[in-house]
Image 1 (cartoon, rainbow, N blue to C red):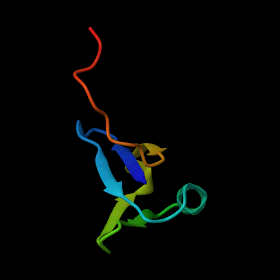
Image 2: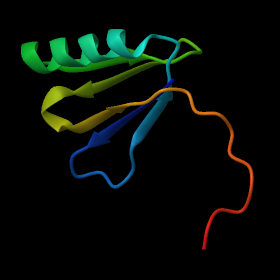
Image 3: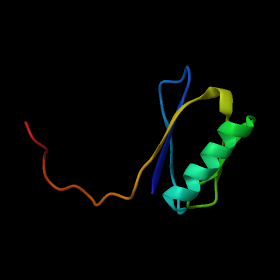
Amino acid sequence: MEVRIGVKQVSREVVIESSQKPEEVQEIVSAALRDGGTLELADAKGHKVVVPVDAVGYVEIGVEEAGRVGFGSY
């Protein structure tokens, strides 16, 4: 599952692939925002991402998406 974190004053998103369920990630994010300090998430390979809560613009929690085929619509 893909998790995108928008960081204030930064043009690029932080994107991680998580093996956790969306509900688990949502609880971690909610607890971090409630408690302050830092948002800490681990990706599927065990790498840890730490973002100060006051710098978080948004968190998008997505589900795994099947690969797309084709050239898109015009």
